[in-house]
Length: 226
Image (cartoon, rainbow, N blue to C red; front, side):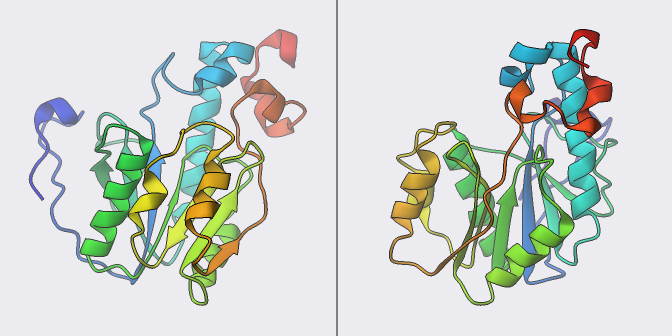
């Protein structure tokens, strides 16, 4: 791969996205948004305000780092807009890349395609905003790919919080209405003839109701919601 131009990075020097030689046959792909006021957790912001939504997102980023940094797999972080040279994601642990594609499906397909082209045998993708996820959950998801070609973590809202595979299946990334309650159903329909492991259904953080009453989030809430 080539180099990112300075407009794509916050560093004074360009951040290389050279061919990454695997150190494992497994890779975790982490999709993240650049944490900017008014641009993250917009549905959550409708209930708690932009400032609180941003702080909650930063907290979720740190949680994601904590549950992924010690995994015995390669880890790649895909930024939505700009790669940041000094942030929560330590370059010694996480390979940094940019997302490419017109919609979420295209961006995920490119990430998986790149992983398999690099020689990985098992690839799993997650977001960076799942509080209800642990390192053990991720280890179990990779283990599921020993016996299955696909692994899916259903979300309570009708989407999924995790998708893993041992080979690229392009139809998983097209003809979906991303961000709606039909994504999981349509994805499983595409996998009807494949070996699939379904993980436990989990709740992701999209609305205030998703975090209401959870002690860990209280420090970030406006006073009237504490």
